[in-house]
Length: 294
Image (cartoon, rainbow, N blue to C red; front, side):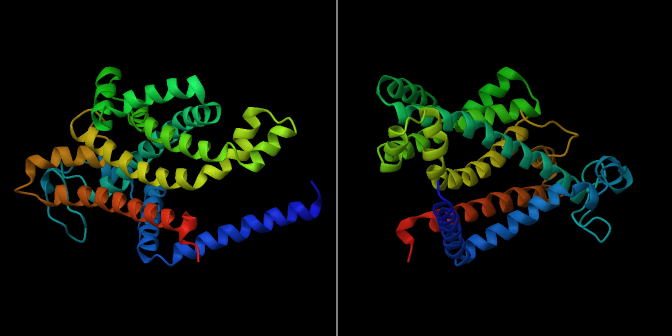
């Protein structure tokens, strides 16, 4: 490839990225979602710096149990006198980590299956998609509960259970995108020069499937966080005393009438995370949609 052609491609990619960012930043709701999620992500990354785990999360003080919000404890304390703010901050790590891990698992497996089915077609496509249809017939939450009940409660099993439930979605999105690209001129040109099928899929087709996949990642991340909290709430996810938003809600429901703050703050953490990811996903969808290009 000549140097001018290489420079032109790099400039074209930069200009496309700039145009996507221009459309994205015009969406005030998407920017709000980006700001909120960035704050939550930074809090989870620097949780140890912001709140000491030993003194604020683990240390119990029965003389100060179920205390309302105050200057010393901005979110109040729980039934063991532990600081709820510290537990919400450290609980964000597990909720986000498991949500992200489940997305990675489903993207790798579902994306690979969808790309193979869409590129090769025929009987292989039919076989893969019938298997996907079977999985799609089972509600994702029910599937995750079944897998967790079979494998047992652990962080990796939780990622795996939620990730498997999202595989059909990624498989169908990837297959649809690949089918729309497999007969394009640049794919035919790659075939003409003798490129391997695996090389064509990885270097020619997948980069052009990023837009719908990126939008789905944000949506799946939101559902992943929700499913983590749901499974922990019913006792199949992260178990106490490890702080996690879902199990915090589960233990706090017994004290809802006497100490509503115990439910309010973990619940708001879940709501803000899911809301921000949904706003971010909607903004990315609008920014990446070529039909909206002006």
